[in-house]
Length: 76
Image (cartoon, rainbow, N blue to C red; front, top):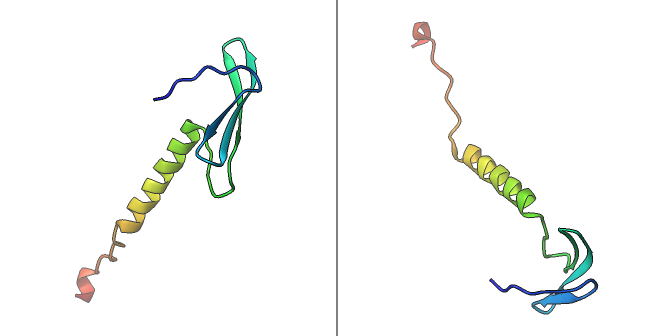
């Protein structure tokens, strides 16, 4: 992990096209702005984890075969 110190309005460049800017520092809170191309998704980690869990549940339900209806013994 790379750890950097930045002041307000200073930036970090990731690759050729992602820019992270320190927008404000208030006490223990740091506000950052992220500029990225439209094809790069940017999420807070907790949102990303919820999305991954939802995708995993959806994939699991798609893998389960549909249950066949029970036959009535009188029709067998």
